[in-house]
Image (cartoon, rainbow, N blue to C red):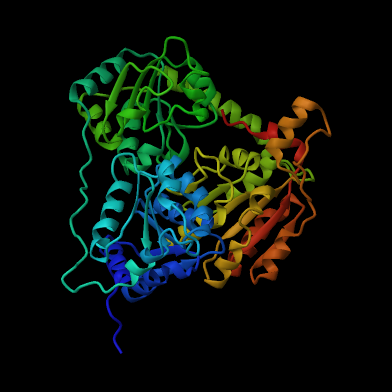
Length: 545
């Protein structure tokens, strides 16, 4: 017997119309009609063991594909579990849509199962949050949510739908909306672009910073062209990593502190002046001139004054700067000076990267991963010090191929980001660099990946501690005074993954890192390599400026 077309079908039809191919979720009765619609629309349902992980996966999908990621969670605790994932996406400007179930309308305020005011709960961490009370309007509400999620500075949208609204018949004359989102990318003020170029020409020691805004605008090719025209040092942060190839002569990373302290001009493209850049204050030269470009005027001048603030899509503004004459005929001597400092810092790190010491030097850990991986591998950083060290050595070569929690600093994203990345780009190697602490946050998602045949490799830099916390506490209070920071280095994390049906291996010798990685990838199943690293070297091994 043919099923009636209900509200869940209308939700799924609208998602499909928007190009959504995957729904990330944890099973729940309040969203069963949405599942029914997704199955009929050919949208793959990918399920997790915790709603936080499902929401992280939607975030990871958006970062890799630049398309909205969609998660569905059940009412009440399903939503509260998802809050962390929504917040992480919000701080990263990641366009996700979280759909939630809700108790039936006729049970409102009666103490229904898992009844709560979900919209109020998530309103501070979403761009738009609403409840749809009418089946006929479901398509409009889903479309509106996606429009908010993908406009301007992007971010999460939230829609909850009472169960009876999902189950009610969707009339045949109600169809999903079309052409409800623009692809327009706003230009900046042309006069301000000219003023920026004038300041740039007057500068003797200019640098460029490209952040997540460049990635979200899809402006990596434009960034490369501008870098080659200006021939000045370019630094990448956050999701901007990979927007300029590490082989590019104008890509720099280690000399960031040096360059920022001496620069007399900074072109900031889609960059936040937050803690990652000293709030735009710490480390800057006293007379530096700053041009900031952002798609949202609210973020221009936040925490520091700027000489020129251009509101526009970073990619389009880069084109305007080029058309206004931004460029140098020859490479400035300043660029050579920064390159010299970059080389010096890399040379300093080479001793650790070549070390045969046991326990394993964390820089050797990172170098062997870098040297093993395919050039187009996708790497997820999920940890503290071990990720900071690895990020200074393992460089993303393509946009969206280095993923980390972002400015919210939320650990536990590893398996979710990895699964989303593998689904989005099944022909790429996908690897998670874990700390042993972060591994434990969502370790059961290995079961989700194994069961659904979504392979990735996780490699743990195991120092037996919440390393960043322990180092800070012992610096303040003395050795042995770091409560709640120790973990068991002998915990057999690899055995856990093996027991779930994946591949697991423990590594104690540096020469075994690459062979273990090969065995893990060759296994064709989700894998965990548990590498014992020297905890005494963790903090001081990082040389990223």
